[in-house]
Length: 132
Image (cartoon, rainbow, N blue to C red; front, top):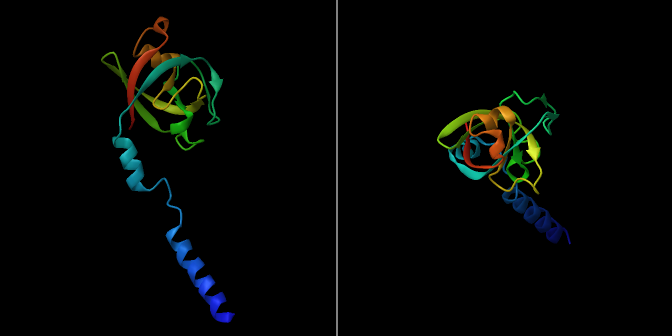
């Protein structure tokens, strides 16, 4: 019985070493994410306090990121470079856009950020963005 018990403990220890989680914020994954350019729908929103806990207003250059890429609050405070209609704007991630409004790649921009790319009356734009 002792030999079987030792074998089970040894096997569990070995499997645990192989199954150890890898931190998603390693320098390799951060630099890989920074190199990616994403495509999606761009909309605009008004004043609020976002999921990052930071109050903001329509004059701030900020965005709400789609929930899938936001990962809870993992992207809070990160800068993104957004391009559309031959124009670009840099903004800070401060909120999560609900999945029913923002699919993967989509961003919800503050009025100030949206106006850098298109008139508010346009309402929805196709954009590309990347982390900076």
